[in-house]
Length: 380
Image (cartoon, rainbow, N blue to C red; front, top):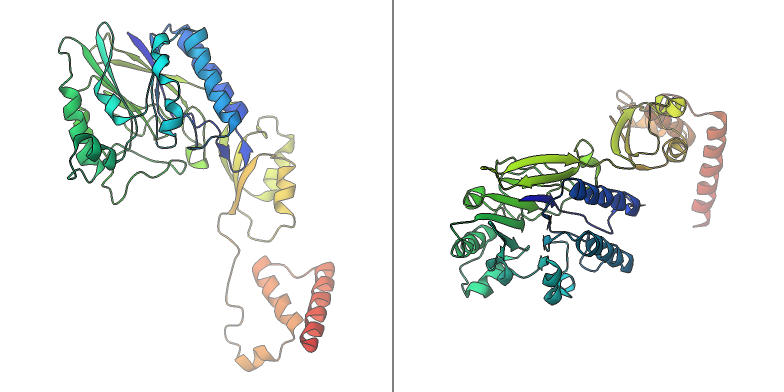
């Protein structure tokens, strides 16, 4: 059978204040197209359908429409679990009758031990869980850390293995040794919450969610699908998409299918003048979400507003080396420094930082500000 593996939709997420609804709908449309073109036998969603436990009404409506499109209209089976960003209770609403349309959505640990039985495959759906959940289920207080709890969970799953079938696991956790990005909530505390990959060895394929890069883990039979949309500048170089998993081959065959964004996420490092001059360069997509790192070291008036005229979707602005800072008064005595007027001290400081003197207008503003400060000091 052929399955499509996706995860980490994070519906409702924003990128530094920018609404990503159109990007997420565009990614979903491509996921649906790939599923139909490849004639997959089902869609795996490995957690984090939502970006927060209390999603906005618009986000709930969007997820509902996506699931209905895939499951009811396209008649594709769905095998999904809740992630650490999801509310298991909210996602579980309606699950008693979901199975009637082959929509399997597991949100509680106890459900992980009853596999979805297909002709030649068993699919174990393990939602995100805390060690406390395992303690309660197994009535064992010794399960203090996730690695201990997950070992017990896998042991219990293997008790339900049908030796005549292949075994797939859908789960949402941090696998030991995986590479992370800034947009992922840290699930590790002192390294104790990482799941050893050796525990996954008895599954024919493990479809993982939580990490947003498809290359975060590169085991032959265990992969993260990555998020279908870029959620931070740390993901700028990642290629987003989904995995096609063919279980008819041994080992399973994996094919990555890319997703093209409406507006990409990029990091730009350049001078202010070069960035502004690019406005007439048709080879530059000025509508992308960009993090700008300026190589300039002098102050630039209204820098963000001016850059937004060329790149309206700037998400961050920083300096490659900051402003130059040197000790101007090295060799001068404290008496010599005290003898300088406030305006001279201000002028010296500005010139040291900006590498240029105050303009006549700036000097006029400085004199007015110092005068006001002096008068307020006399009145105090």
